[in-house]
Length: 270
Image (tube, one colour):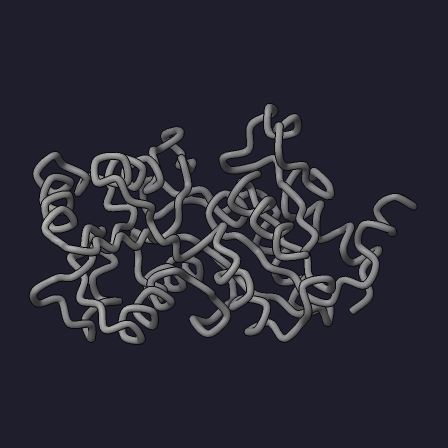
């Protein structure tokens, strides 16, 4: 207990990953992970500041929140930091007009963005949209640009649904990087700018925050590089080998979100 007290002392804000921590996706939208609905409710009642920090890029932020509400979670769009709104802000600030290689469920996020005569490519988790034809079109757009710009909404390797592990956007981003000889700009975890934005919205400094996620690289490693503490849950995409990762070690490993919240309420100081 003394070790946990030391690890969690001074925490005032909590960033929660969504997929694999709150729920597992799948048929009918997915199912909550055991204990997660009540854990979120307890955390929000505790006095600790809470923000949801996701790389979800198959759904708009609105659709994601609607799904979570149907599953029993109480949250609003304003509590969620997601990559698509951040990407839109970046595109407008730099005068970029994207060719979109994204899931149909995400296109509504880009309705106010000029997509004529593209001068960059935005790639997200397009799922079945990652056909040869669509990947090749994105490749052709990039190769025709004097200075190709590839923006990736996250760079995860895989995620978990009820049916098993699924390839994530990172694998397809790597293919375009390799083919075009370029490096993508990542909007989403583990980008430092993404975590800094979430911290600003949360209203706490990095040393006062803890990230809870199922991804040892994207969630834990990304948060720690920003000066935050990070716990990894043994749900979602967690694999036992994560606890022996050669580069990243979590500040603690917990069975699930419910256990993480128990520890936070015992040892953090709201």
